[in-house]
Image (cartoon, rainbow, N blue to C red; front, side, top):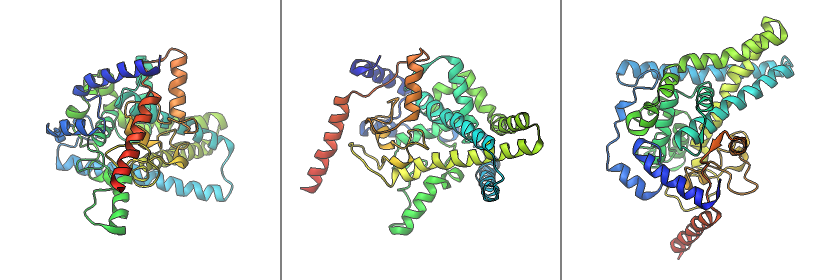
Length: 359
């Protein structure tokens, strides 16, 4: 598998899938085509709660506020416990395990598998990854995918749900407002309003994904119940269960949230670029490991359907490594790879554009 022939056939598959919401790249031609059709913004009936009325919108904002503030309070409590040495290796082990499981559910499941169809896999693993991603408390899977595909459709232009570059105010104040919007403010304005019938029709047609979207509240609670149950079972004490809940539940959600949101904010504002893209995406090396490879975000915008965001040898991409492992054991196929010559051509286009602008 792999090589330029496989990548070309996979790209053709994604072009066909685009009509069903499967390919939302950043190319200028695709973005012009998408602007010719009016997105059904109010059609996202699989968000929880539904965004179809003023009341449900208020409920959603209140829910998002709780989902943002509660993990933050848990983090503050954990800092106090850490300062007083009231944390054990078990709590940290559960934190690490839950972080990896739920973050990979987002990076490999929500993002590379379901949003961009970067590879195929067996149905049980597809459902498992979507369930783990739901436990990250970033919203129902269908709403998440619709929002992200819309982000690619309008990257850093009007219509992008979480660009840091659209604040009307210029200068330092506008930059700070834009970064705050991209990081967390968008959750109270544009989240889950992308229109699932426009951007995620393929997932709406999947009964398993519809059930998982409806089950989002239960899955979010399950992501808190699992560390509590592990702590309780291993230590045999309620205190052990509660500290595991704090670290493996609330603190873990806090970390996964802010690492994910940093891709929206930091990786569209600071960092390095080497390809010709019509957005402000960047690569941020120091975020690569905590984001499990998602911080090679400029690479991703240059080649959205690639299963691997780290394109160079030293661009560490744990999510890509997992996909490679799944492929090796037969649990992943149609893995999209970007041929080196295609990368070189796009990098040269960026150099040519810079030279033309300078001279």
